[in-house]
Length: 131
Image (cartoon, rainbow, N blue to C red; front, side, top):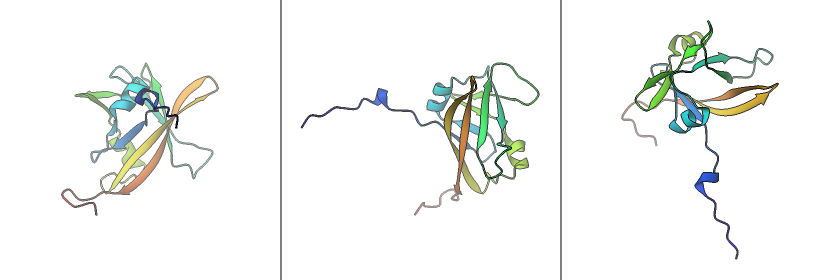
């Protein structure tokens, strides 16, 4: 048998973000690195107005702020966006539910943006076993 070993370097990184219990949107270290996020960047979110069944968020990374953008905030090695009031206005129950996103890069019409595909599950109470 002829084996070809797969190097971890060739693996694709899974880009993810999670809404914390506080409503802040946090990113994994791999996502921060891949998206080249840092505290000098700003983020803008959009919804798909043409498809009301699309529950995804669309994220645009900016180098300068505008009146619709959120600053990227550094906390230790991690970065987050203070999205609490925005997610509350969208009726996302991040206190009761675990809400996370798989992130996909999209290049369309000479513009790069990211589709955040939403997934939810009920939060377990702290100390409660998962089975």
